[in-house]
Length: 158
Image (tube, rainbow, N blue to C red; front, side, top):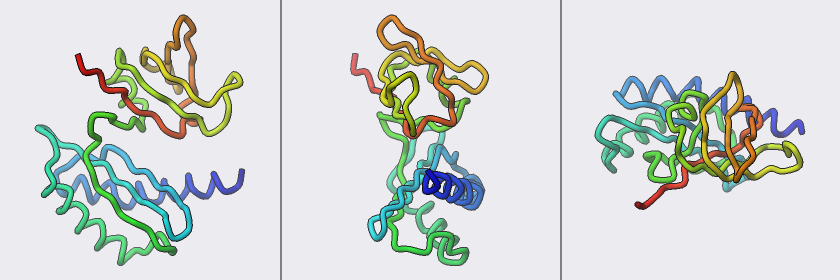
């Protein structure tokens, strides 16, 4: 359990360091994922802007973030930096993001089991206090935001 705490505080540290850099460049910092796996660690920064994100935007932000990371050195082991747009399977990180995507289909994976399961797929109903409300078939689940490890929109192509 201790390892999860380290990753989460590392993520908070990276968020505090990098989000202002992204915003200063004129983009929205949609979210940050950090997966620590020895020499295969990945730091993924999602950026967004009105009208969408282009490859050039990712390159600009990537260069700036690399410079900050080189100076601050928050990740001591080797890692890969990826900067991208949230894309079709937009990941959701904050209560505000969950609220603004109510009515969409989502896939959610929890850090630890809730009511005996870790994976939920269904209709995002919205948020209530610190919980994300998901309807799976005819059952509604209130999932605590702190338990959510990963959440993505399931794109509909109709």
